[in-house]
Amino acid sequence: MAISSPFPPSPPQPPHPGGGPEGGVLRHAHWWQHRWVRYGALITLLALSGLVILALVREQTGTEGLLVGLGLAVLPVPLLVAAFRWLDRVEPGPWRNLLFAFAWGACAAALIAIIANSFATRWIATATADPSGADTLGATVIAPIVEESAKAAAVLLVFLFRRRDFTGIVDGVVIAGITATGFAFTENILYLGTAFGTDQLTGDSGIASVTAATFFVRVVMSPFAHPLFTVLTGIGFGVAALSGERQHTRRVLLPLSGLLLAMGMHALWNGSSSFGELGFFAVYAAIMVPAFGLLTWLVVWTRQRELRTVREELPAYAAAGWITPAEPFALGSMRARRQARVYAGRHLGRPAARAVAQYEAYATSLAFLRHRGRQGRAGTDFLVRERELLNELWRRKDVARPALDHAARMTAPPVRMPPPPWPAYGAYGYGQGQGPGYGPPGQPYGPAQGYGQRPPYGQSPAYGSGPVYGQSPTYGGRPHSPGNDHRNGHTPGYGYGYGYEPGYGHGYGYPPGPHPTADPHQ
Figure 1 (tube, one colour):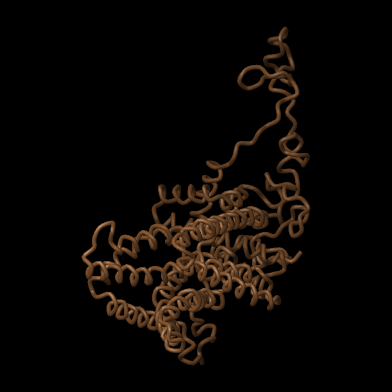
Figure 2: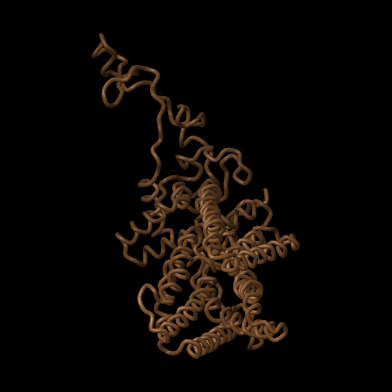
């Protein structure tokens, strides 16, 4: 592979976010193609939707009911957002995606649902002359279709226009869950405000009030109901994101299947009250709770698999010198990541802790990118994206490397060493060796009684059967660089450490340079 410079390069400054005059990309672009125009239009749309929602809810509940409903409905929101954010800690997505998802669910999706549900229910009541049957049909059929479709639109938009941030199941779950949390927030305002208005008319208060009962059912018992439904849609999009770009049928059918499952579970939940006096509790115990537990297990398992991917893919970049040998372990452990951020924050301040968190996120994205490349699912921009991520790591290495090395030492599991083949004495196991020292019983000061004939590194049971450290070919003949006292071809500690894996060869990897990686498709 061609090498333009023997030294780790200082990464070039990235191009202007909008393309700028240098690239000439947007020099003749139309006004609606500018990013700020699109963002402004989206923010305006969501803000207008929010104002209309507030006006509709206030009209139905009154000002006092609106304020009471708002105060009670906001209680579960921080817990749900924190839970989904915790799931996203391996490769955290940008906050702008989460803010968009929540705003879409709370404003746009809620407005669509209110208008469409009301129109459909009135039309059915007029056509059938049965208002009671129209309400039941609207709750069990119309509402699930309309609401789940409106919430799925947010997941679809992120999937299409933020594809770089949407790489797997966890991303789909997080975006869908945050969208549904926003939708449930607005819906709870409406339900709780209406219940409070009913209590004002009847004079009820306390535990026996309609407000307390509504709060218990919607906020205490089932705060995860809407997120649970929409997460099924998110899983469909997440599995589609793992598919190859040429698998068009799979990328269409999987999200649709997830959406249909979400509609079915939503319809079952809404129709549980028609199953008898205990129908709600039966559906809750027999379906909702097990489904919630199963999905939670699936997402946590997926998160652990992502950490394993990080540990398996990053050694290629450690071999090339872009990261240290300890970093794949540290970046593949949530405990070690947290230790690194705490260490950097304690010694260098909050900016350093943020830099370490960014380093962790970029390294994780790099591991996922290489994993997709090895499976033949990388896009045409693989090399460009890889170079961008490597440059981001290189900018933060001076702060992140010491913190991650410290975290790796603090969290590394103990290594069990095999016992020596000779009798051990004392705390350090004095045995037969070649130098003077304590010997076996009967020869306390005889010759050849040192610390034992310990073979060199690489030839003992604990280290395998490789060559002695420092006497084998190095990765690409890495040059002398700051913090590295070794010379080309004599880097100790590597040897044939990575074996004969495709892309690494016999320890001759690639040094940092303009072509930083081996062929990911090998």
